[in-house]
Length: 574
Ligand SMILES: Cc1cc2nc3c(=O)[nH]c(=O)nc-3n(C[C@H](O)[C@H](O)[C@H](O)COP(=O)(O)OP(=O)(O)OC[C@H]3O[C@@H](n4cnc5c(N)ncnc54)[C@H](O)[C@@H]3O)c2cc1C
Ligand SMILES: NC(=O)c1ccc[n+]([C@@H]2O[C@H](COP(=O)([O-])OP(=O)(O)OC[C@H]3O[C@@H](n4cnc5c(N)ncnc54)[C@H](OP(=O)(O)O)[C@@H]3O)[C@@H](O)[C@H]2O)c1
Image (tube, rainbow, N blue to C red; front, top):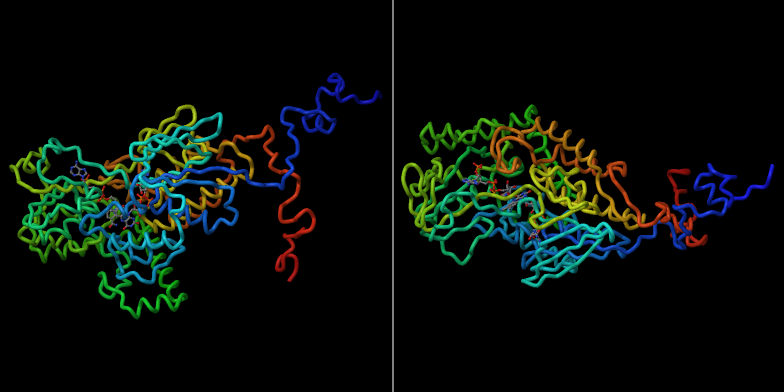
């Protein structure tokens, strides 16, 4: 046999690339060994949209929970003048969280000082501000900065982003784009003839004007979602007339966690109770866990065939009928107000005194369709009512589509009902993570927890991108399709898919349901288990394993560190 000559192709036509390397050749995927420890992260940059609960949770995780966060440079842009999102923006009378306050906290900042079991929006905003100061969460935040464009650039593997900062356009770029713009942040005025002809005060609940004195005035409220119900209940005693224009019935339920209150309604914590929360962390933790468990139980209550749904619907019906009796309401009106769809089809709203409002002489509910808004008021088939103020409690665009010019791989723009991947990713959008995207877990679990799980997920994959020299990672179309087919089938079992108009169907009664298909635990564990098989991955290097570096791990310290970190007590011996 003649000696093997690696440079002679006639002698080795079938050699694998690896065999060619062994022979001293350099096939296309050959790269030199990187003289660095395996998994050494490259420096990357991240842009996050929004400094609401999502952006702030992410900031905390990067700054205080990720031990090796030096590789990640980032900026969080928010269009507002302050952080806090919803809780900075919403200042309408009655704005409050209808979950027990102890379940509505950052997981790293339990708050023994809540004044009440349920608290106002102002108190939540104060808590957020205090938390931001304590943990330095605004270090990387730029305010008054509205994202107006984000465009994926395949060559550089970066998002090119334009930000409007008070009229000056800043350009920025980053390997990673995180969208924490909020699912209920783009408020929506109703499409009603003549709306802008109105010469009185016109507001949306999300754009409240605190300088306007509405007391003693004639007020119209359009909508009976959570915001409309809060506004009507709070404002009516101090207006000269209030008319609530509604189109559809809605379930009014007992308060969330009512069984943990003395009589089902809100109460103030005593100084002694707050002292106990501070001084007995174990008991405080147990109380919070019990509340969290209960809120997460809402997932079961939304299942049409579950006993919790019967219980909730039965309780809501009982409460509503009791009120109707007290109010001596016309049975025809009362019958119209009891929904025939499952409880939870529209977002559940506790009966905080809304129905009682209509016992007041100055307060009415109007079911007639609004034909026209005039310069002085609202016209229905029964004539025109004059008003000084019209409040549109008409909700949000909840499609989860970015509100700016967002262009992904191959020029893809997002249209229609978005089909995301576990609410955190979407195909053709490389290195793009959503905290609260389509089908997010927002209405049947604790939202701070859901946000934390989505942030953990994003950071896990961002770290993989940095440590494995990944240029781009995006979810495969087939995985998105399979996930959404499964989700929409599952969601048929839930109240969300019932026949009612709600924001879970973006204001429609039928069709694609925008809610998470599963429970809180299901969301967390599913995110934790998602594997690389669902992604298209491109690498910076010609060889995907160049990140294996010099074959050593940093903790081994060139042979002088821990060379057997797997050898731990309890595994390799008692
Ligand atoms: C009035 C109201 C009451 C609510 N009450 C409850 C409740 O009781 N319980 C509950 O669980 N949930 C409630 N929610 C839902 C609430 O949205 C979430 O609980 C939570 O606030 C979501 O946080 P987030 O950070 O995802 O979004 P947001 O708080 O909406 O924050 C998003 C941030 O992104 C910024 N942003 C958006 N677009 C851009 C852009 N183009 N450029 C720059 N910045 C941008 C916004 O300015 C905002 O600061 C309520 C919502 C509203 C509107
Ligand atoms: N927890 C809280 O205390 C709280 C408070 C506020 C908001 N939120 C959150 O924010 C979400 C949005 O609540 P929201 O109350 O602002 O909005 P929403 O639930 O979407 O309700 C919007 C209301 O406006 C009505 N409407 C919309 N367009 C209309 C039109 N052209 N003419 C007449 N009526 C019209 C709708 O009527 P139809 O139903 O007939 O379409 C509905 O009653 C909530 O679901 C919740 O997640 C929570």
